[in-house]
Each structure stands twice: as C-alpha cells, then as structure tokens.
Length: 188
Image 1 (cartoon, rainbow, N blue to C red):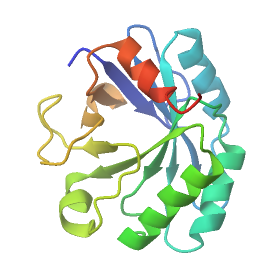
Image 2 (image 1 turned 90 degrees about the vertical axis):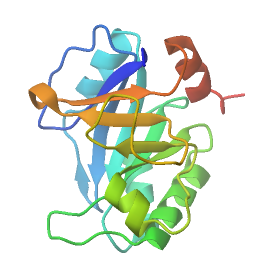
Image 3 (image 1 turned 180 degrees about the vertical axis):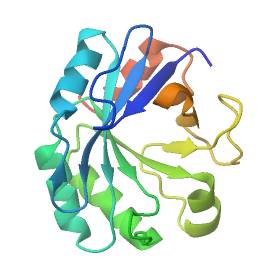
C-alpha cells in the first residue's frame, strides 16, 4: 500500500503531515465535546496537500443530536471524508449497531457532499455489527501487516499500528490522486 496516512486527536495537537496522503482528525465526541485543536490539525494537513477526514466518537443514545453536533462543529468542508468512530466508550458502553447505522444515515443526510465511512475494530465488525452498513467505506482497525486486515468485507482504510504514539493507516486506493477523486466524488 503506497497510500498512507495517520489519524490524530487532541492528544497529538501537532504532527508532521509531510509524506502523507491523508489525515483523519478527531472533531467531536458524544453530544458536547469538540476538539479545540481540530482546525489547526486540519490546516496542517491541507497545507501539506493531503486528503482530510474528520471523525466523531459515537456514544449511545441521542444519535440525531450527535450527528448534528458533529457536522456543525467539525472543521470540514465539502469533499472531506467524515467518519463515525464506533467503539467502546470510556464508561464501558457502546452504541448499538442500529445506533451506528442511524448515525451514518443522519450524517449522510446532513452532509450529502461528503463521503461518510465507519471506523471500528475487528471485534466490533465481526461480532457486534449485524447490518454491514459502513456508509461509503469501512475503516478497520486491526494491528497486523499494513493493508491486510483480517476481515472479508471490502475496506477503504486500515489502521494497522500506533507506533510512535501516532495511529498509522493505509488506504485501498492505487494512488493519492485516486483517493482525492473518490473523496470529492459527491461534489458534482
């Protein structure tokens, strides 16, 4: 895989985007939290010419209000990739598969000019998902060889490592240009 990227949160307020093809930035979580550094993080990616994505850490309940919070507070523009981060919360709960599906649908409705993808680990995808709804693509977390996640479903992004305190990803596209074309594919 030659199309590589990282995903960052407020824990990595600065990072080096040189040599990357894409960066996912944590924008929001739950109903109220908004990253105070997402704008700066996205600007670093845009300045480096990479494809930008934003993600929302999903909590159970009030799914429509979480989707609205995400699209209203995220520093994204049409053509950026938007993602639902579906995993266990800090209090040990997790949104249901139906709530995940509803969030993806609501974000697609609110931001029809953006690709919307699902981020989750292999446990959630293989054991908690019952619909296979991942929006415009699956972003799978699986610590294994880059580009070889242990899922049968087609995937767009693979988070394969967190070496050096930074989550590392690859994308299933033949080139940076192909990724950019896909990301902007709903702008027409």
